[in-house]
Length: 122
Image (tube, rainbow, N blue to C red; front, side):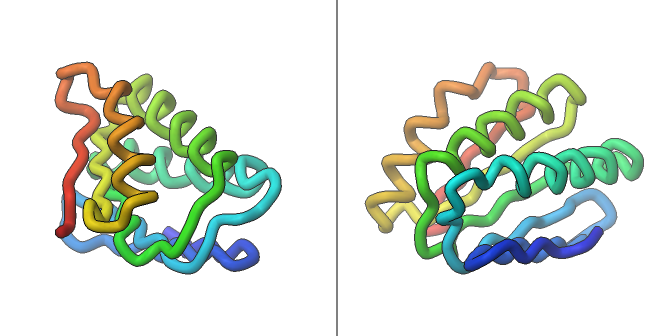
């Protein structure tokens, strides 16, 4: 799986184990329309995850900032992953206020089916 570099945002894809694909987010996601770049990338990630039977872990702990448009792209990823039965784990820094607020709000997408998990890194 290739890494993604888009403006100030970098997403590094790492297969940490035979069952997990990690996406490490760094920099800033501040593009006006990040969905244009993120959605095709997420589609590739989900295709690889389905083919190799991998869970996907998104790590936001080192991300400096993302805008509200990025939240839309993440919501679309959550919904697409669920339709494809790909398990997503979102790890964030609970001590960083903007991350806590953003990811606590996304918990509404947890359905009790085990396909979406949130973890605090702090």
